[in-house]
Each structure stands twice: as structure tokens, then as C-alpha cells.
Amino acid sequence: MSERLAVDGQPTAAHRRVFARWAQGGWGMLITGNIMIDERYLGGNGDVAVSCSDSATFEQWSKWTEAVRGHESIIVAQLNHPGRQSPLGAGKKCVLSKNIAPSAIPLILGDNALAWVVGSIMFGTPQEMTSAQIDDVIARFARAASLALRAGFHGVEIHAGHGFLLSQFLSSSTNTRSDEYGGSARKRAELVLRVIRAVRKVVPASFCVGVKVNSADHMNASGFEDMLEQVDLIAKEQVDYVQLSGGSFEDLQMMSTSNSVSLTRSANKRSLELTGGFRSRNGVNAALQSGACDLVGLARPAVKFPELPVEIIFNERLSNKEARFDVESAPSPGWIAKKIRSAGAGAETKYYTSLLHQL
Image (tube, rainbow, N blue to C red):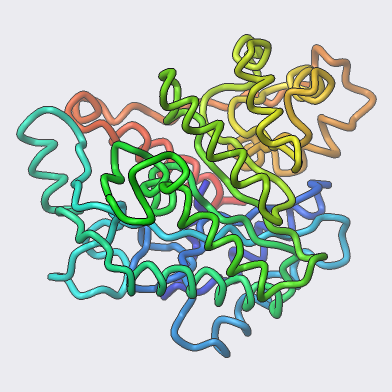
């Protein structure tokens, strides 16, 4: 989820209104949408970003967290860098400057001329990051975490999924480096591990630090084994939870296989959160009671049912059969979805963002 409510990279009264409503609705932990650590590179217009002015960022973020205070919810800032997924016109980078990525591998949006043209214009071929640029990214994650702490957030979530920069380092399809940051599953995780350590140095032990990775990228055998190794490495760091996002976990066929056991063992030193596809109280309970996870994340249902915890999950007047929170899909973007792979996902994001704006 991404709020896309920011103005010039700063959260607004709309953020405060939406998060206050969720806090009143009984949610346990509110994780923000993408907060970009570098205002030059955004995932899209309307993203919150760390500005060059600490004082301006502190002031606006403090107002944001103030909206949640007085309720039982805690608020966690999701920190991110888009890497090669920063479209033209998003962020304060020069129009002619390239995106940065672990390797100079462009986004492939489809196997046709239209997809190639759109990808070339919107994203281009990224620049392979230098050691200095990698060090800068690590420092920016730490700076963002420090600002989040000062502004009243209860924790941060390091976003290493959904094809963004840290995810690009984790994946063998986007990271072909031969230095300390590439060449094996362990080395491809090195940047994520260094980001975690840098963040931990600037926040107290009581400050929550989570890491989000994307399970849907790793469904072939070798990719899954790599993910297990990387999740295990992440879980050995000083993190409080690991979130696996992607796919539908309410269908527990996936979670009843050895995959579930392997994932749980890999993350057993920390809490494991599953996000994606939960649409009923029964589904949530089954995932928790089976031991497949310790935490459940809900995103789109929170937009359609902002008071979902108090009105559905913990509403004893509703039977388990009645306690559902189904959500609709976005209207299809039509023929363009057949040409450009990301069009469908983009339409889904735009649709739910428009609903969120109405809260």
C-alpha cells in the first residue's frame, strides 16, 4: 500500500486524518506506506520522503505521529528506496540523471515494442551503484530511522521487497555484481544486513525494527532456497519481526506444506508476519493457530473497512461465517495490461489510493 498523500515529500493533514481513523478503529500496529529515504528518488508522486532539512521533516512527521497518540495503536515508519523503480518525474533528481541499482539491468515491462518504449522512457537503464553510493544509501536509512525515533514513531520497517532497491540486491535476476554485495545468496543480502546494523546503532533496543521481504519472487526451487538463507540471515540480526508479503496466505495450502515449516524455522528467532490475501476472521485465526506466523498484516481491507478490528475481527456479535472483509479488484485497465506487465498492479494501486483519499 502507498498513501500517495504527500505534498512536496511531506505528510499532510490527510495522513493525520487517515491514521487517526485507523487508530480509533482498534488496529494494533499501523505501518506507513513507503517513506523514501532520498527525496531525489521516489516510487511515485505523492510519496513521503526524507527532505534535506531535518527540522522540516521532524516537524511534519511529529504531527503525523501525534494523530495516533491517545489510542492503543503503535505507528511504524516503512523506510524504502525505489532503486531502478523510480519513474521519470518522480523525485528531485535531474531529468537526465539515471536511477541507481545493484546492476545496470533495466526493468522489463513486457515482450513487445510498446512495453520496451514505456520502460525506456519512464525508467531507463539504471546506473550500477558505486561503493560510495551504497554507503550513502546505508547512511540515509540510518538518518531516516533516527528522525523517525525523534518524531515519535514506535519503530521502522526496512522495505526489502516488491522489487525496490534492497529487493533488487537480494535477487539474482537484478544483482549480477561480483563484489562483496553479489555472487551468492549470502552476499546479495549483505546490503540489507548492513542497513539493519546501521539503523540499530542509532535507535534504542526498545525501538521496533522490522524487515519486509517479498515471497512471491522466490517460488522456484533455487529461488526459494536462496530466500530461506536470506531470511535466516536477516532473522539473526537485531530485528523484531520479518514480514513476508506477496501471494495469498488465506489459502493455507501453501502454508501447510514444508515451505511453511522452512520459513518459520528460518525466522524462528524473530516474529514472522504474513501479509496478503487474508479476508476473514477464520483465515486470520487459522494462520495464527497453525503456527504459520505470529502476526498477520492487512492492507486493502483497512481501506475499505477502517474500523475492521472493532467492527469485524473482535465483534462478538458476528459469527465466524459472517466475519469477512472481502475487497473488490480494481477495474481492469483493458488492453494495455496485456502489453505492459505492471499496468494491472498500477491500476490496483491507483484505485485503492483513490479510496484511501476518501477516508
